[in-house]
Structures are given as structure tokens and as C-alpha cells.
Length: 420
Image (cartoon, rainbow, N blue to C red):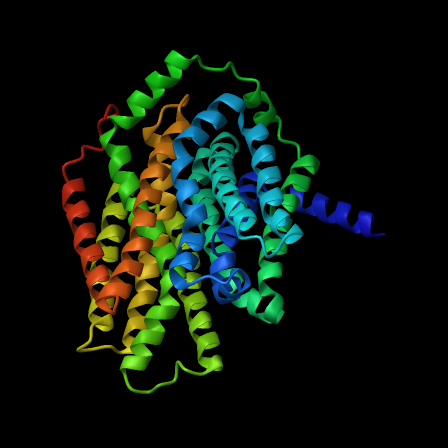
């Protein structure tokens, strides 16, 4: 009976266009695996007997690996083929999530598996983007990218809502649920006809000289550098908010003199507030996919990134010692997340347009590597400034000014040229 129900579910699921559900499910899993540990970070700190510095290193492990693997993963997808890359990345993600359950108190095993999660999600992400490029009709490309981005953002929000229900076993649920999502994607791939992906998998492999030539062309493309930095300040901001917004809200609440943050219920409330901000980014990614179909994408990207810079400065004001208003901070964090989410579909649609047909995954990998460098820098910047300056305002102000410098620099790019 269970097998029959599952088979019917798979059949019904396959009626939804694959270029919609494939990126949605893949990115939902990636988002969950990125922040599942952060949602129950205190449990992991106690489980491994870590101080906060050690916890910060543990939390950042997948992001470092995800950053370093972007360009190599793009080459792997271009050479191995999209379908095989999807299957390989799903297997690695599942194994890396389930393995720590075998020795839950082993810190080295947990760190190694988190690094593998970062590597595997890098490969999975590029395989998903390549699959959308192969399967999706051009008229629905922006919508598919928006749905993909919304699913990722939803995946980052789910741990903050779901894992607290498991109480003291939230750490185990973080591992188990993270492993189930790639398994589900792998099973659905078996039941779904993906002829274009199978044909693409048989493409001729590039020689080393040709691979180096592709890397050279990608690395000299100014538009990819600009898009990558824009994505870094959008995706990176969402990730940084997922890691630090709870602390920011608690700091502002404590500084306001209400002393609410000391209770356990308030901690849960800050986690809920963080999930609401991430949810706003989720809906913005859906809306951004539709906006990308109705106005020039370079202009839309510039406007949204300018909004990110503006709300960074307003969040810095709300965090400052002379204001320190928790509701003002929450109110500015919402539109900040919305501006970040709105850029997602435009970023990847522009990258696909800029890249040639033979180097899509490599170009996206290079762009994502730049974005993840900015992402990691933001996470570390906020943590270091919080530790030594006692608050987040200087970090948010510096980030906002950097975004505005990027916006003004991007005005010199000629988007009509198909060369650079």
C-alpha cells in the first residue's frame, strides 16, 4: 500500500513541469542544509563542548567549502553531464547528513561532513541551474529561476520553524531531515523522464586546453564580476541575516531596557522573527521572477541592489547605540530581505544570457564563487565587529557603503555588448 501511494504521488508530481519542481526541490534541500545547524546552534555547541569562536568555525565550514568548489563544480557539470552531476551530488549530500548520526559526539566527523555538504551543495546547485537551462522554455526561464530562489529561501527558513519542535533532539533532526531531502530528489529523478538531460550527459568532454580557455574567457568577463558581487550582497545578506539576526534583535531588545531577551520564550520569538524575515525574502524571490519578465534585467538588478545598500544603512541606524530600537530593526530587516530576494531570478537569468552555450555551468560557478566570497566575508565581518565593537552597526554601515560603490561602478557596464 505504501509503495502504491508513493508511486501515485510520484506520478502526480511528474505532471508538474520538471523545470519547476526540480529546481524547487533541489534548492529547498540546499537551503535547509545551509542553516539546519544554525537553527539549533546552541545544541551543537553543548554537544561538542565548544566556545563561541569554535562554534563560529563549525557554522562557517560548509560556506567555505561551497565557495571553493564553485568553479571546479562548474567544470565537473560541463564535463560529467547534468544528470550524472545531479545524482552524484544527491548521494554526497545524503551521506554527509546521515554519517554524523553514527558518531554524534565526534567533532572531527561532524566538521568533515559539513565540509562535504558544502562541496556537494555546490555541485548540486550548478547541476540544478544547468538542468533548468536545458529543460525550461525561454519564456518561463525567469519564472523558473524565481521559483528556484524562493525554494532556497524557504529552505533556510524551515529549520528555524521546524527544529525547535524536536526539543533536545533538534540536532539529530537537523541531520536526518537534511539527508531525506536529497534522497527524495534522487528517487523522483528515477520516476521522471529526463531525455534532454540524458542526451546532454553524453556530450563530448573538453580537453584540458579547452577547459583553461573557457576559464580564461569567464574570468575576463566584467559583467560576470558585477553580477557575482551583486549576488554576493543579496544571497550573502540573506545568509548573514539567518546567522546573526537573532543576536541583533536580542542585542537591540536588551539595549532598549525592556530585558525581554533573557527569557527562553523570547529566544524562540527571535527565531520566529528571523524566519519571518527569511519568508519575506522567499516571496520576494517569486516576485522578482515575475518582474524580470516585465522590465530590463540590468535596470531591475541595479535598482534592487541600490535598495539593499539603502536598507543596510537604515539597519545600521536601528542597531546603533543612540537608537537601538528592536522594532525599527525588524521593520528595516524585512525590506532588506525583500530587496535581496528580488535579485535572485535576474542574477541567474543574466548569467545564463552572458555565458555561452558551452560554458553555462562554468560561468555560473565563477559567478557563484564571487558571491560566496562576499557571503563568507559578510558573516565573518558581522561576527568580528560584534565581538570587538559590541554591536553590528559599523559592519552594516560598511556593507551598505560597499553596496553603493558597487552600484555606481556597475553604471559603466555596456549590457548591449555580447563580448565583455
